[in-house]
Image (cartoon, rainbow, N blue to C red; front, side, top):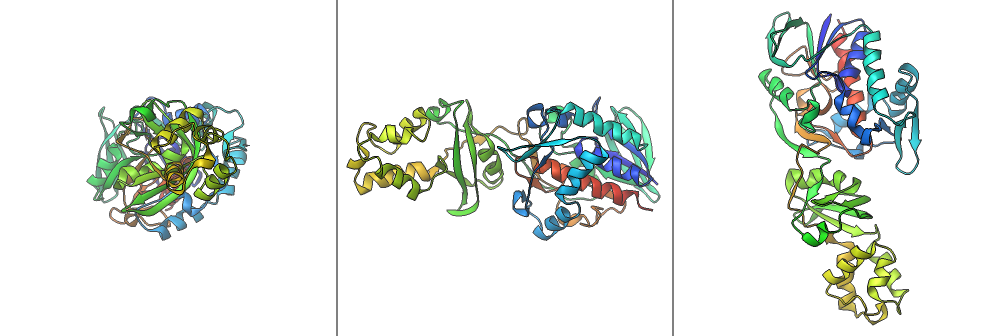
Length: 400
């Protein structure tokens, strides 16, 4: 069985390894001059290969949560780690502070290089500079045509072309066009894990400050998600793990992002302020938050920074608590696919068979990785999706 795989990123390389391992004749097609360019820039160049633990709540799809659960069960996290360490020979180490698993080398390039080498060791052939322009479904399989005139025929086809995020790495969304040409509908796509922007000059002036927050995404005044982590002020707005995790709610459906500064709730802040009755409000808040942020928040509450905490009446205390624990970030937009880490939307999960990732609409076609309507939060979760869906599609496509 000849299996063609379009896209040699994380999902495509994994699919190629498993398909070749099953005995298939594998042709791995990559539009760029080298495979896995997105792997090279992941984790700030360190490559956050996996999280150290996960649950269904770490992932989002607009489709069936049941299908999501089934996918996650196909290859448990500990077995994925074992594949990296024992089969590929890439030892992973835990970063205690974040719970992320990085290669012991603390560099992304050895991960990419070893994956590519392992694929070749299994007998797969890598074709670089092969931009798949057209796919023709035929009775015996697929006829593939590249932009440079190269032609290829295969009995099975796996689309692992990625999404639209960081298009400089080759993820330009072309795979969606190919899937649509084979009968698939496309859900609206949007940048996810993306920095948000603001027109608030005072908040932009805090660029470089990082602060822990609890966040809530509100839609029509009702919470739809929540979490906590660092928020980073940038020259354009907001970034950091907390904002990136929450961003898909803002981008996809216009949710309001509300934060509690310092990750404390109203009761905790109340106890802190009452325990410092003789301390100036700005100084008391600044004992827990960066001083410039504390001064701005006290002003936003309509208070004088020099007044003592013990002199705050109920109304003024409530105003301050509102700013400290339910601050709506004034978001004006986002930075788009250029800096987004992943793409939301795409191929609906109900159009693939969850046990194989074969298309329900085009027999012999398999879809994996970012092209699917499935995203994870920051911290190796999207790589985990790439590894598990790549394996599932590769093994299934190689079966007689």
